[in-house]
Length: 213
Image (cartoon, rainbow, N blue to C red; front, side, top):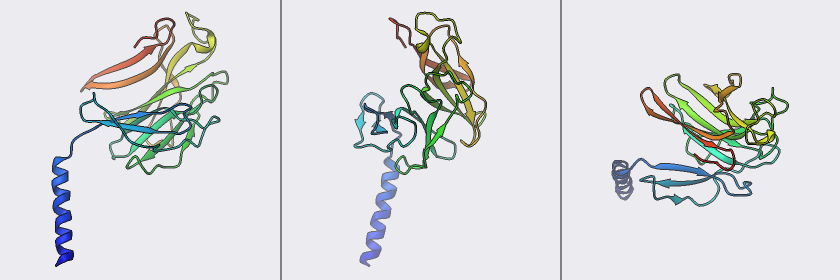
């Protein structure tokens, strides 16, 4: 009887908990020198945040073995997919890993999306977005290819434009293409779905002294 009571008690607790559970906002971040990997924080209202203790994934790939700018999205199958910057300078790709629970992660992969651009300076802040219409993932990032675009304010090695690839399975990827050229150095773009057919692109003008969102 005691065992049965314990099982019933646990079951009732689980039901009670599931009825009270709330949707939470998740914030991904890193800490310099970016060798510790993924840090997470959560919020119930989007204004007040509580950090979760410790790193959830340490970087193992890329020449610098760092993890900057981690970006996570949840796919239709409930799997979390993450991409990140693997090198501050140099490198022609970004990191990728997946998880069902944000604790246990798949083997880390290096995705060389700029392998056909031998002069590329960097691959910065990849941002992942799940397109629920086409049922595919869009990954955008900032790269500098010297002398590819009008110089503008920034020097040639800091004159960024946004590029992208798409994938359905993280095994095969589309060809890399230009995503956004506003006519100035741009980084840190984020895609937000506002409505059924309405999207917003949040970006950073990286030209000095602007550097505005």
